[in-house]
Image (cartoon, rainbow, N blue to C red; front, side, top):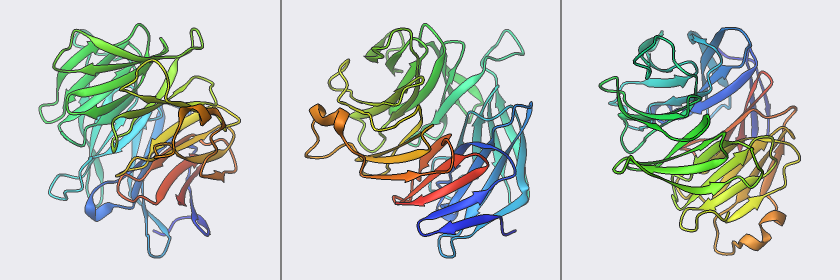
Length: 336
């Protein structure tokens, strides 16, 4: 079914049936311009919808059979992180639990629900997760109960569970084989190595006292760098893990709280940030002329103004020149 949409050069808008928060790009070779969007409704019952974008005609198509009910608004969505079409077509979601769903041509069904709490049927909310593209059995989740859990999704079992922080863990990101980082209500970025589970390394602490770090994105294409954002902060902090505790730079041109950060794929030189000022900014962060002294004054390479506060932004993991943003009931694709 052709779907309600708006077009202008370089900006393609899908109008959803609900307020949209979360968004994910498909990675599969045969579904590269497919996206998933998660609703943001205050009810228990929420929705996840698959949307296909046609790169040739710039049209969106949807199929009402590829919408599924989701308890609570999903905090994150990720498709199976491999281009190989021999793998089953799957999507993971987080909210009250981590769930794995199987995608078929005419329906989507729940494959597994992951409960890390052995002693109770209740589970602490999952704030986010990251699915390892280098080992597709492994999904790392972060939770309000201060833990991070590494799941083996083939065995549908916990691989490792760590008490990661002193307060809620808000985001998590793989940095490479056996290595991940997380951010928390305690204001720190901590790096963990699964080969030495007893210890972690604090590589950055929010200088604003008692202020959580909410978002973390490890640069998959250049794992020397990660980006983080604090609660109610208009700054993006870039950290070079070789020089912990002192930020490499701070990007300060947003005029409202930053809600999302996403690194460009393949080379990892650029970062997209989006926030309550209704702007998506694209920064050239990692370059030969890059110096931390000019960080606060650093201007974005490009910016885009949306019609309302931007909830989420995701750079396509396979198409370097496409970024998805969500605001109100709209999914917008930006050609950059």
